[in-house]
Structures are given as C-alpha cells and as structure tokens.
Amino acid sequence: MDRSDYDRIERRDRRSQRIRKTVTYTLLTVWAIMVLFPFYWMVLTSIKSYSSYNSEYVPKFIAEAPTIRNYIDAFTTVPLARYFTNTIIFTLITTALMLVVTVLAAFAFARLEFRGKNIVFTLFLALMMIPSELVIITNFQTITDLGMRNTFQGLILPSVTSVFYIYLLKENFEQIPDELYKAAKVDGTSDLKYLTKVMIPICRPTIITVVILKIIECWNSYVWPRLITDDQAYFLVSNGIQEIRENGFGRENIPAMMAAVVVISVPLIVLFLIFRRKIMEGVSRGGTKG
Image 1 (cartoon, one colour):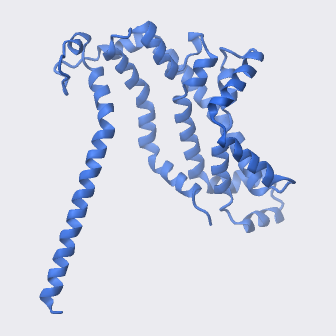
Image 2 (image 1 turned 120 degrees about the horizontal axis):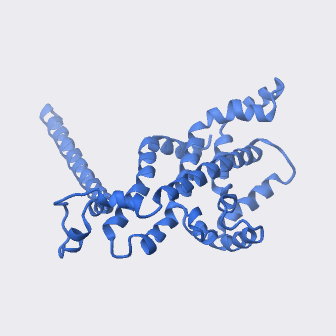
Image 3 (image 1 turned 30 degrees about the vertical axis):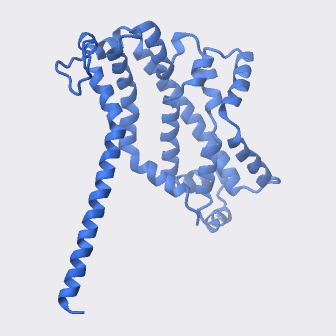
C-alpha cells in the first residue's frame, strides 16, 4: 500500500469516528432533554401567576410575567418551614444511627470469625427478597403497640438499618488485605481501633456514598411517615406535600404546588451535583472484588 492508500484509510476512519460521535452526542442530547424537561416545566410553572396559568389554553414554554409570589406563599400559607425542620431532624438522626449499625455489622461479617457466620449472612441477604411493603405492616403494629405513633422515635427506628448497605460495605471491607488486619492484631490493635483508624479511612468513598444515598432515601420517604404520623407537627416534606395539596393551596392552584415541590427538590439536586463523583466512585469500589 502506498501513502495515498494510508491517507484514504485514515480519512475514512476519521469520518467514521465523527459520525459515531455525532450520533452519540445527538442521542445523549435527546435523552438529556427528556430527563430535564419535567424539572424545567416544574420550575416554569412555579414562576407563573395563578391567573396566567389558568388562562393558558395552550401551554407556553416561557413565562411572560414571572413572579416569586408562589414561593412566598409556599412558606407563609402552609408550614413548609416546619416540614423542612422535621425532615432535617429525621434525616440526620436516621443517617447517623444507620451508619453506626451498618459499619459495625459490615465489619463483623467481613473480618470477625464466629460460628454460623456464613449461614447468618445468607439469611440476612434473604431479607432483601422480602418486599418492604410486607415489613411495613409488622413495623406499624410494633410501633403502635409501643406507643410511638406521632413521634420521631417511631419515624426513625424502622429505618436505622439496611441489608443492602451492609452488603455493600462488607464487600468493600473485604477488599482490604487480610495481612493488614493480622499485622494490626500482632501490634495489639483492638478491632474497634483497626476499624476506625484503618478500614473506615480506606473505604471512605463507599461510606460517603452510603451516607448520601441514605439522606436521599430519608428525604424522599413517604409511605412509612404517612402511616405512622397523622399529626401535622411531625409531617415530613414528602407527606407534607399531600397536606399542602389538600388543605393548603388547594387542588387547583398548581403554580403554588409546583413552587413547594421545587423548594423541596432543590436540596437533593444540589447534594447530588456536589457529591456525584463520590457516589460513582463509592459504588464502583463496592462492586469491585480483588
């Protein structure tokens, strides 16, 4: 082959590469528009006045007279600030307790030796096969019998553990070489000190991922808080939305409802954007053996 043939092949490869990139970016753009459009429509609706929204026989994709009145109503007409406070308390306490339980359980399954460990862990994993809706009935009856309805204790206690997070951390802990653990034991290091000084720092990305995912889970929690609380003083933002719709703005005031939803959604979006790389890194580390 002469030089011209090589040049022709090279041009063809570059053209094929450009076509592939064009198709790929086009599909990604279409997918991004499909994913982001509902959020755009939610924000757009939230800055429209009630009268202008109802006068639109054909939906408009821009707001001709944007207003922030709906956001003011979201905090003045209904106790949205109280729902935020309750959700923050519930999220922080639940996440902290879950982290302690999950880290200790994962360490026990990953490093400690005790009779029947594999059988116990197998049975533990089997719990993942049980739909959460079935467990809610038992939890509801237990919390009611203990007199914890309409309390933060009743909201928090059923959510302080997670089989999936224990499994994820166990797999991550097992990637740390056994020789490191044996060397620490030879030096007289206790299991708790080895966990806090060695394993947790090494597995920090996965632990951060677990914390972020738990925060998102708590923030979006709806079914359990809806069942266990009927006192508005303990409503979270998720079930508070229904209360806002029924007894706050009314079913017809869609712009005000959208303003409340935007306010509730923003913290999670910001959290994900800030820690998205940590989430991806932690999940990839948790799913890698060896």
